[in-house]
Length: 269
Image: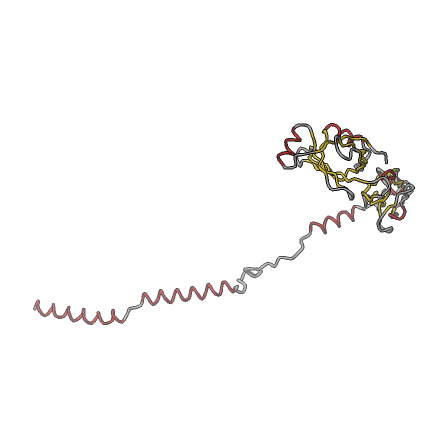
């Protein structure tokens, strides 16, 4: 991989407000990490870093970094991570990883397919991209920007595994050799699509239905709640009957009233 020259500047502001002010002035905050040196805060001109990233063949970028007025003005670094704003997608921060020319590094490299698979052209199959990135190890100068895989020979049901990948000299592709990277799947029939759709939309459980009446129109067995309600109604009716019945005091008052009426009749005579 060919390195790209880029100029950076030491950064003194470290807080959130300072980073916001830095961005408003046309600079992007950054941090460079390394195994042999402590992390250092840097900043880039927005236009410079954007030009480098836009001209790169992939997200793997090797920088020939020049740090102005620094004790270590020349450094070799890989772009580790770029943070973007969620809504505007503007660049917010850049993480760099310092590397040495004579030390191997391990990075994730994107995988791209080239050619038209036979199983797709003649058999109506579908090319499936199983892995979009692979882990590789190499010296910085030998790192590939992208791993290109020829899929023109792939038939239906066939796949290219990690063990089948051909790397350039000095590059080691890591991972389980039996894992598929690219494959051609058989075409799916309309019946299979309908069955898959039906299984996806079918309910996961059954709902128990409670019938209030039987099919012949007669009422079904009362539920526990109905039985409790019936008992409550019987109790309420009994109380109402008790209220309507004559009390002992009322029975005693009746003879007294009869006697008072007799006395009044005798006085009139």
